[in-house]
Amino acid sequence: MDVKAQAAVLVAGALLGVTVLGGCSVDVPDPAAPKLEPTVTALATPTITSGHDAEAVAAKDMPFSAGGSLAAGIPVGVSDGLKDAPGWQQVKENVAGESQFVKADGCLVAAKVRTNQASLALQDDKESTVGLFTYLDPTILPGYLKTATLRWGGEAGKPGPSAEVLALEKPGQAGVRATAVMARVFGTAASSVYISVACPDDATLAAARADVAERLRMVPPSN
Image 1 (tube, one colour):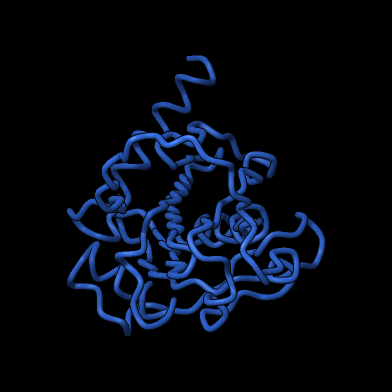
Image 2 (cartoon, helix red, strand yellow):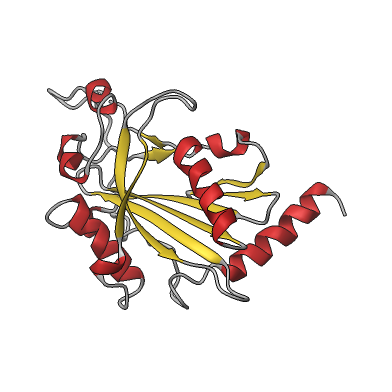
């Protein structure tokens, strides 16, 4: 069996093991897109937000309380750096906003970025992210969620700022894969990031999460 075929089998098996949210779909649907208006010829307007310094925002940590410092409507992204980590291979690249990576030990990581997420924005980014988990599965209580961090820009292997996310963990059991989900809604930026990790057991999950924390960096928006 060639490498692509092996990867396909591994992805299929790993997807069956992601049971953190039960039978609920983990997809984050975009709100209905606005109706297209007739095209009007006009001078192009700059995308730079007046008074906003994207580089300064990207150089600092992004706790939940700092979400309002982002430019309105410019989405946050996720890098593909995990594909360069030892043992990892990218098997899906930005398909409808989702990328997937598999590791030789049987772990699967899926990273999703969604835009036009203004409808998910609540009082602040933390409350909005709790609301996202509740939307995906109403049985998830706020007490189940733990604050974690992912890299906020920067370069792999070098110190850099971090961004707060909420994480939902489920330890592995006999016949059940160990899983973790990390997510954040950026209300001002009107986007969300959702990363799921599924592994054969707790030990491989811990190693995979360390790789994700270092390599799968959030990409701060630019002007």
